[in-house]
Image 1 (spheres, rainbow over the protein chains, first blue to last red):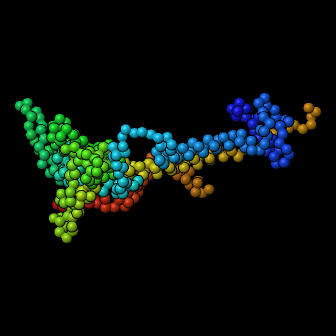
Image 2 (tube, one colour):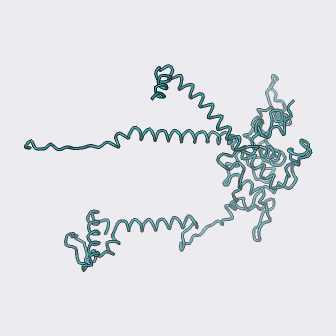
Image 3 (tube, one colour):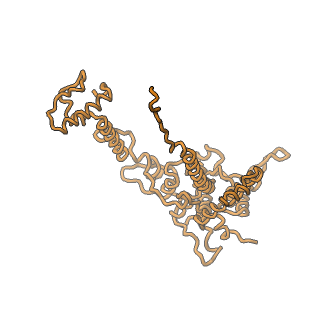
Length: 342
Length: 61
């Protein structure tokens, strides 16, 4: 009915009806507003309220809003049952949000942690996982000095060539070389790991839901499978891994890696204790850095950009007001011609 | 009025001076702003960056 009425007629009717009710006169068909389809009851105040556009709009808003709120909170509507072929466990447990020291808007990476994390990567992860996109030179000025990075690179043999005889030869690594991969190709990696491919870790923090939180939870989350969950031979149970069955076994244990920030440098200071959680935290920070080496510079540039652009915005707003003030404050008078016998 | 006259005579009167002032001003602001932000960044992230921990691993020779 609402859609058929012209808007003016609707508001007129409403105003008229309200006036009627206020003066407590008997509700009768209004004399001044006539519609082809008007009914006798339409002039009461309650009817006017029901028919008003504001009521329609607010009722629509209320129902849409409550549906949106409910689905946001609970995920699905009540009384409309759903059937899923999967269980929530198959999407993996949601990792907790951890207070990473590089989490805030102004926070840089903790570079001591990156250095420890590199040690964990080298001693543990590098046995199966490659780190293709990080070269030795990337460590310089981030976690190692140039001399240290050179020494690390020289420990690895790289194939180079061809030489003037047309043959490939082996040489020690240089700063410009990339981190060595544990397997020559994907097939070799699968063959050594029961068919499962250990993913390259260069961008793994960016490539997974939950990012650092997920990596840390996964590394520390190995538990015995709950009753009723069967894990195949060669697989391991980890609730954070989608599906629960992961080929990678638990690899981090207390004291597995010896950190180099302690004893021999300063005999009175104890090094960082290499607990499982500490190892997992450090290697996660290292991988977060590997996924985003520009992180520190990015945040620093962000600070500058926000300051500059907000200053420029403020200036331009001021200038606009300044220029428009003449127009905004202008008053136009019309003096009608007087007399003159027009 | 004296101040604005002084500024006008010092900066705006000659276009050559005006343009030079803009260029040097931009250069000086760039350096100053960068120094200021870096100072804030370094104090906010004290002890976390490589330059703060470098001395632990490198012996100057």
